[in-house]
Length: 557
Image (cartoon, rainbow, N blue to C red; front, top):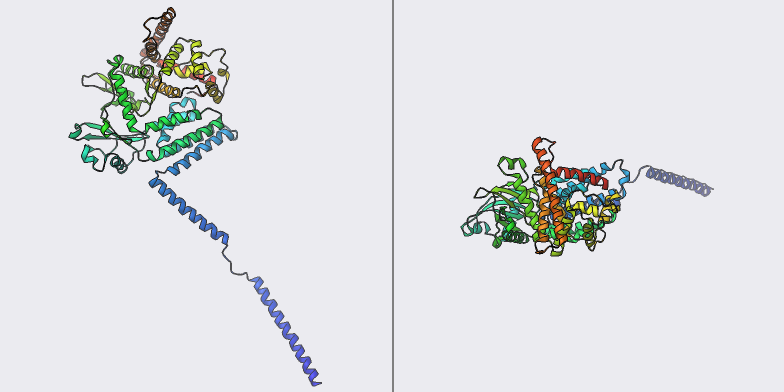
């Protein structure tokens, strides 16, 4: 009995003990559920932080190395590709999302200008090409891009000193010079210029020491590759023939970065001028060079004290004759184009000086001989013939040469070459089109025949026209250049046929008529003085070309 009672009590105690244990466990579990475990750091966030830090450090390191040792080659290339591809996308695929296309022009021109300015070097050169042919671009581009002709930023003397030591030796400053002004007098896209004086071993002459920017040598190859790549992209997006010019343009720009080539160009033109009886009385000067100290990156040349053609008022104030000046300028380039077949292709006002020589006569000085084109004999004679046919409006002759050059549109072709409006041929359907890409495609019918020199010639002619226009059109540009072309055509013809004689009389009559019109306009300018209403011949030509361009769908202003 007692045992049975004891067993029962033990059983109750066991049950109660289990109940308490179960309740205790339940309570603990509930507490565990109510109090969350301490947070554990996510592996994902750890990886993200580590990856971001690594990328930041790597990117920063690459940027510093790129900037210090590669002249920002990678940074510039990425920047250029981003902006240029963005422009291609916006114009090619996203232009419909803009309420006004002028808004896109404004944004795109500003992005492009900033990129070209930051990238410097050859990008400035390409931007200047846009500025020079600005009439083919929207107004936003026309207004902004002339800024690229402003003086480029100066490099520090430390950088210039390294270039000189690399090219002339560690002791160059004492070996060759009395002094070098460490402060540059000018800077451009490819180089900057310091005034210096040779020591007695080199004649104790003052010189202009042209030193290439240190980044050009490292950047030029990649810059030109990007230029070719973008041309192909733009050709597909805008359906305009661009890549056909890439190799030729790249070749010319690459030559321009070699100062030995520049020196040889200057010497070659000097010989042409010295042997040309036509230029004997024009008083043209090419600065003397020093081959023994000229390298790919360093070019010493004779120092010339003159006034740049960029400042018309300063020229007048110092007593220079603008009419004589433009005669010198246009005849010099007429001889290069129609006679020598060797053409300075960057004749903007900054590359021209005027001064009085030792005899007190006005002298024109031509600088910067880096960019030249050479015309083969066949093309040169064709161009002379074309100029003559354009002047007397020989449509059949224009069409014949146009076909030889793979060109379809006679009227557009004529206007571009002569830089004066030509009435379109009735059979020329391209003049009825309003899309610029269609016009360009129609202009270049056969790419294999198209002369690569032609765009460079058109660029040179445009610069000549611009300077004459800025100076108030003191000379008849069309007559002066036509006269050079005619002289070259008939210089070797001792016996002229009857048709040839008739043609010469037609030309002379046309030139006489052109001269009368020019005289009337000049008289009108004299009556009106320097007022805004006083327009020269080039101004009227420009107005007619604006109207022609509008009919062709080009915003020429």
